[in-house]
Structures are given as structure tokens and as C-alpha cells.
Amino acid sequence: MENLYGGITGQGTEIMSDGSEDFSSKMEFAKGLQKMVNTCKQTITQEPHMPFLSIYSLALEQDLEYALSSLHAATTLRMETFLQQEAENNLRKAKQTYMQRSEDSEKAKHVAAKAEEEQLGSSGGIGGPGTTTTKALDKKRRLEEEARNKASGRRGQEGKMHP
Image 1 (tube, rainbow, N blue to C red):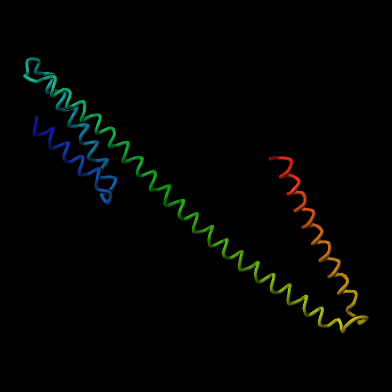
Image 2 (spheres, helix red, strand yellow; image 1 turned 120 degrees about the vertical axis):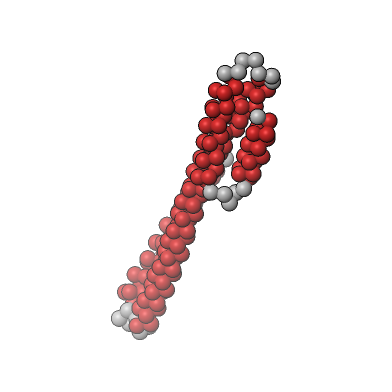
């Protein structure tokens, strides 16, 4: 029994510390350990006058606790690995979406600026046919600027109200 107990402990430490080992082998080890403990426990309890019975029983109880904790650890590691992979995939997709939207936004800004320049260039100067377009663009810019100023003013006031 002493060799069996020492062997089980040594194997368990090796398997649990090896991160590259397959999860299923860790779980199989723990399940096998549970079966072995239950079998040995039945054999030991049938011998009531066995020397060191309490020591063997304690060792088997510790092996059983170790098997249960190994199963729990392997299950937790499997779940954490799965969740980490899923999170990494979601992060990668979010970055790709962000980059695509940033590119689209830059393209839209460039096209808008180019269209604005073309409209200003085709106005033919002051009093020309594009004067109403220029006035409309100027009015639009003023309104956007006022909206930005109001928004930043509100943020400043909210900051003063909520210290």
C-alpha cells in the first residue's frame, strides 16, 4: 500500500503540472484514481485487525480528495481555455470591424471634403451662381459649431453639478 500511495501522488503531481498534457488524460487519471481508492478502501475495511489501518484509511481519503480536486481543476481549466479562445476570437472580430469602420469613415470624410471643394471651386467667386451653395455650407458649418459648443458647455456644466 505504501508504494501504491507514493506512486499515485508522484503521478498526480506530474500530470497536473504538465500544462501541455491533454485535459482528457487528466480527467481519466482522476477518475481512475477514484476507482482505485474505492476498491482499496473496500479491501482495507474487510481486514479489521490490519496494522496501520488508520494510516491507510487516511491515505485513501487524501487520495480521494486529490482525485476530486484534480477533476475540478481539469474541468475549470477546460472551461477557462474555451472562454479565453472565445474572448480572443471576439476581440479579433471587434478589431477588424473597428478598422473597417475607421477606413470607411476616413473615406467618407475625404469624399465630403472633395465635394465641398468642388462646390466652392465651381461657385465662380462672389456673386456667382454658387453663392447660395456657399452660404448654405457656411450656415451648416456655423450650426455644427454651435451644436459642438453647446454640447461642450453642457458637459462642463454637468461636471460642475456632479463633483
